[in-house]
Image (cartoon, rainbow, N blue to C red; front, side):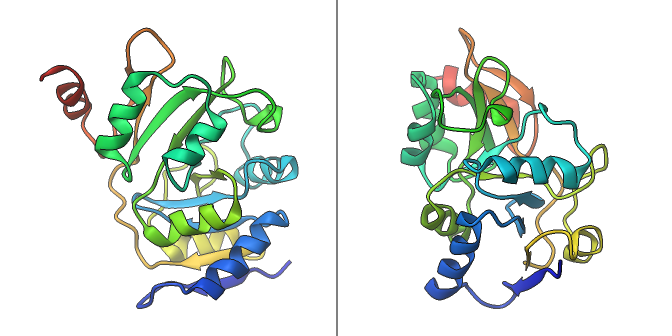
Length: 214
């Protein structure tokens, strides 16, 4: 299947562009897109066939956790269950930004294969305004796994993701080179105290200093 390439370089996407892409996502499309870290691969988290395609494209075993992006805090609350006070404090301080938070999820809001251990989700709100608008227009969390093959490093170059995924996904969004360097930091909020599962762009000590050194 031929992929449609959409360019972001030198221009901000208009409403028609976003409406077109959101319509494709609601119909089950898979998209490669630039983020504040690396290129992401995904589609709407509420469509089971989308998750199956993403696992197949990456060569990744079904059942391994996939992260998500949301348009805003309100969307996260639609999918999460009983988030702790730490969640609201961290979201206010670090979102939009490269901080992924692991939360308890509501029942029956996602395909079973997309829940993490103990019915959890890992989600962040990304800085690019166009990306948040796209997720909002699409009406659901967007899968945001790295656009690479399983076990390989994440990619910040459009030409590299194009070589891997051309004619294998529905849309490829060319945003040039992304900031790269480090992925998002992952903080687990499902235990008695927050814990760092992966230190990325935001140093763990900065998170702890914000939470505890007041």
